[in-house]
Length: 143
Image 1 (cartoon, rainbow, N blue to C red):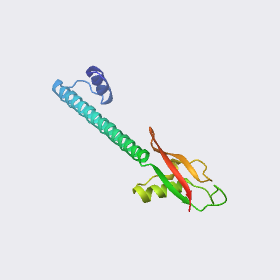
Image 2 (cartoon, rainbow, N blue to C red; image 1 turned 180 degrees about the vertical axis):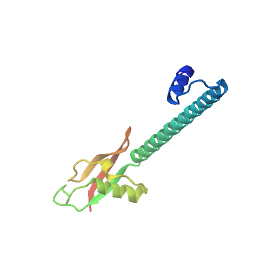
Image 3 (cartoon, one colour; image 1 turned 90 degrees about the horizontal axis):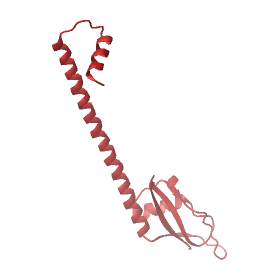
């Protein structure tokens, strides 16, 4: 917004006829200083938000590396005939194992576990961030 545009809108809003130029200059200067300070403040806030997003993404990537390098989580289940197990392995089971072994809280809604009804090795996915997904190996064995 230019200075002239501001002056015309200012004069219309406040129904100003003739005003001393010193008064107008004070108002214009205070408006310009305020708008400049507001722009700086908004820019600093945007930079802070971007830094926070970057930090959260880096933490998620670090946690994904931990999950992928840890090896396989062992899931004990009561065995049935052959390779069958009683029940199935759910996302909540995986969350409980992660909590007990790594002391990390993971939301079970972010965990995708394939249908597991037999003994064997499986891969589950954990969405840690909109751009970061960790692959977690599970080893299901009979007790």
